[in-house]
Length: 420
Image 1: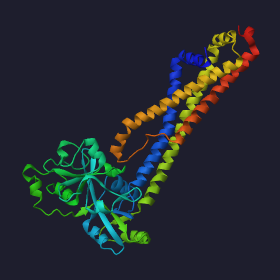
Image 2: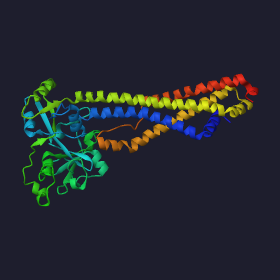
Image 3: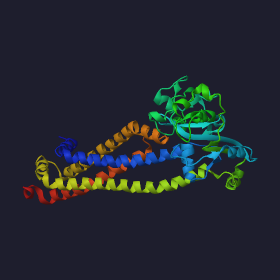
Image 4: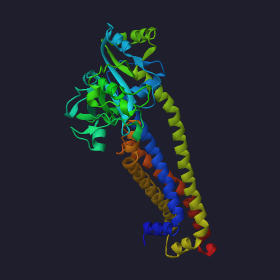
């Protein structure tokens, strides 16, 4: 019987302890690799979500709050900015283009964004890539809708399908604008940004949704307006959530940003997306360090458990060691046997951790993406991940060598007569 077979049989004789050790090493692997992957993919998702926009302008609130809500659809708005301010920004000599956006409604859990055609003309993501249609056209009528790729895939929507939108983020029956329906006229190509999870309508469409609402309350039965009723009214928006601004020259960013704070008629301000993202990374960095420390502690506990298990097993394996010596086994074989046990446990633990990561990627990441509007890529293992796995295996083998060395010395000094 080979040493590998002996090691496997030895571990099977201590099934419960072996399973617990495999699970603890697997958990360490999952945390070490998973946390790092989520951090990297989150950073990539944030960084690639908006490009080419010099300023995000909105009502005065926290700069991080404005960025998270306007770009990533995370959180809730405190106030809106007036349309007069949007027009004033458009007419400024330093401004090249303006994209007004209006948020606050949803469709079956997906955010609804009201905007103008300039959104599809000027908004960019990644390395200044424009939005492109997979099929259909951009909206041209108040009740047209252009949906992101995730919305289309998850809900199996096609061009021509009709959808109903909900007031706010609630999907309860009373919050649905059931008397007004939108027709899907376009589906965007996948961008791996929050755009994929968004339903895009015109600002006129957003105004049409709420034209019969009073003070945030739904209309009474006799006040309800349908699509044809709404089209007879003026659908001009009086306010928006925020706007993306592109300037004629980058040199004007800071001066225009300062100028916005001096406008007394409407308390608005502008943020630079890149600088605000750096603030977010600084905040996340502290949490990341804490998670790393916790993960390392979990790994240390797992290795200590492996060490204690092998030490405790020494006292219960005297007969096993004697039999190996009787069969002609050299003390070095006993040392290799215990090293192999640690190696097998670590290999199985790493495999369990990797499999758990794949399961999380399949079942939980889509849920997180839909809730947060982020795109998390944790499906492929990188070279750095294999390095982490290798370090875990090496650490396990090193830990196993300690009790293995003690067993080796005992068998050398005691001999058969002493052990019997």
